[in-house]
Image (cartoon, rainbow, N blue to C red; front, side, top):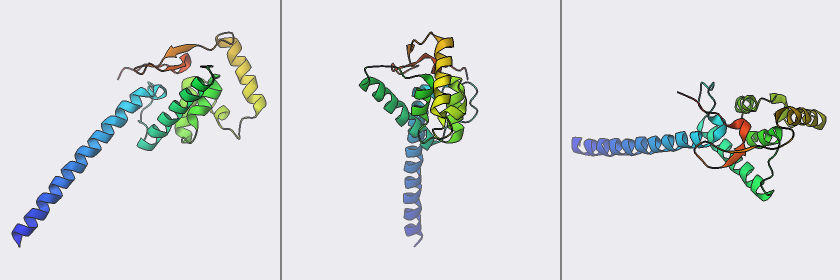
Length: 156
């Protein structure tokens, strides 16, 4: 009887070890993904994104890059790009993205910002930043093209 219990305990310990190793691998992959999604490399971020927020933001980033590729690499405005990135994200993450772009978070809420507010900010932004030209840079560690305004590097 005790031999049967020890076999069960041994199998359970091995299964727990496999699951622990699997979770370590998953967490390591998500940490790498967080670095690859350039929005999240913000210096003032105290808490890392949850697993689901990381995956949603990565999906939105890929969709935004895909949309730019379909539109012959025409760069959207900061507000349009931030809106693409914030789809289905929490308010906290959306606010962090808005802060990294230097835009008011209310402009990212599709129901809160009227087209007039969006156009007014876009005109002001284009006039002050780079005379309406869209600036491209390579994102850190990924080689993807993205607007210059989201490129940030942190020392940890």
